[in-house]
Each structure stands twice: as structure tokens, then as C-alpha cells.
Length: 324
Image: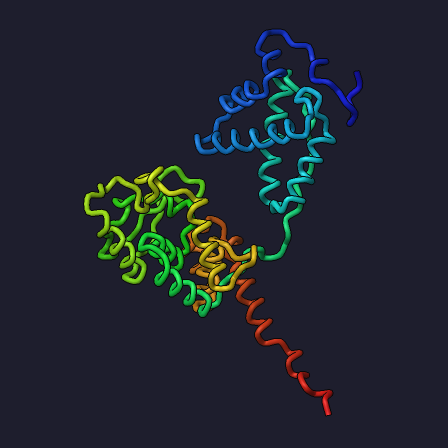
């Protein structure tokens, strides 16, 4: 049978044992086999599992058969994700996992690789996350200090003063705050790292709200998370990145920055941009935000230059020129 974009049943692939039949009739078996075969961190395996569960749930809701999926349906899945408002970056990450799964599935004669060479959506070349002005940052800080709990304000203030990622805040334990060379620091397990081999300086401004929050936890042990859940159902557990992102997003909305470009990551972008504005040096941005690639730091320079250009727009010289 010649392969094309038309309907090609996976059952036409000869199977030699019961596991192949089970994988074709039960996608959860195929997913489990795929996950077990991946040489990645446990957190990545969990992400793969969630991503594929979402994909197969979509197939189920559409009334499609797992064994009869073609390239056409995978493209439809991509297009519906984009139409639903998912960013090209997010959709691209979902498709990467789907492509990996189908390559694995074909190698094991579960399904044809119908996702082969499905294109990843192009990412916008523009700077997607908006930065805050110093005035906006100040208003956000005051709003959270006045209206949020000590924990939530401490989180916001920490990110504003260090540019930490939400995952880095989540991973922090109380014992990660220590003194080194006479300075208070927070040990960081950075993005894509397995150990807490990075650090940020905790100035008095960054640390005091944390100290105030920890005073409310007099029995807390050093190996406990720095920030914990306060709800009855999850009390004492580590926070999630989703919670922190939602917390900051709500704060941004409440000061009038209700735009999808303003997110928790905007605070990190703000730190990088302000450092470049004050120093004019890419290496200082790279050091502060712990970028492995200086090209990433260059983004903040472009943003600062772009902002300065807009604020000094030569077209303003013409304002009122043609009015009698």
C-alpha cells in the first residue's frame, strides 16, 4: 500500500506480538512505552505525558480513531491550537512531543509516522513580552505590598529585584538562603539544570519581605520550600509555576496592565532591560540573568534601544507645524 496523505489504517502495519496490538487499540499503552524509553529527566517525562494526553483527548473529542489518524488531522490539531490563542512557541513544543511519539510509534510498528516533517509555527521576531517602566514597577510593588499576603508580596518583590524565573522561585528551599563572602545569597537551580549551581545576591530590599514572611513559619525546617501553599487542600506543599504566574498576572491587571504581553516573565525582562539602560553592557545583563548565550542577553539591549528611539521620536518635531 502506497503511503500518502489519505486515510491509512495503522492496523495495516503487521504486528508480531500482543504488545503491538495493545498499543494500537489503547493509546495509553503506547504513551507509557514511549515515556519509559525516553532518556530525559523525570520532569520532562511528566511534560511529555501531559502533552500526549492532551493530544489524544483532542482526538477522542473529535471522534477520530487513534489507528486511523493521518497527517491531515495532525495539521488540524496544530491549527486549532493556534486558533485557540496558544503562542507559536507553545504549539511548537506540543508538536515536538507529538513528532517524537509518532517516530517512536512507527519504529515499533504501532502507527505510521503521520507527524513527520509537520512544520513548527513560526515565532514572531518581535519582542513578545512587554517590559514595565520604573513607574509601573513601583505601582505593582505598592499594590502587592498593600493588598497581597506577606508570602505573595515576598514572591513579587524577590522576582522584581533578582529577575528570577518562576521555576527558580518554586525550586527554592529555605536552606538555599545563605552567606557567601560576606553577602547574603540565594542558591538557584536554573532552567535546564539538575543542581543548585547558580546564585543571586539578596540585597536587604529583596530579603526583608522574605524574612517577614518566614517569621510567620517559626517551625519551618531548612529543607522545606521557601514558599509554600496556604490553602487547606495543599497546605505546606511547594507552590507551582502556574500559581506564581497567575498571582503576578492578576497584580498586573489590577494596576491597569491587562494585556497578554504582560506576564510574570515581564518582570525578568524588565530587570534585564533596566540593567542594560544603567550600564550599557551586555555582559552585565548576561551575568545578572545567568544567560548561557550572550545572544539571549542582546534581546534586552535591543528592547532598551527600541524604547529610547520611540521616546525620542523625531516626528514629534512636526507636531503643530501645519496648524495656523
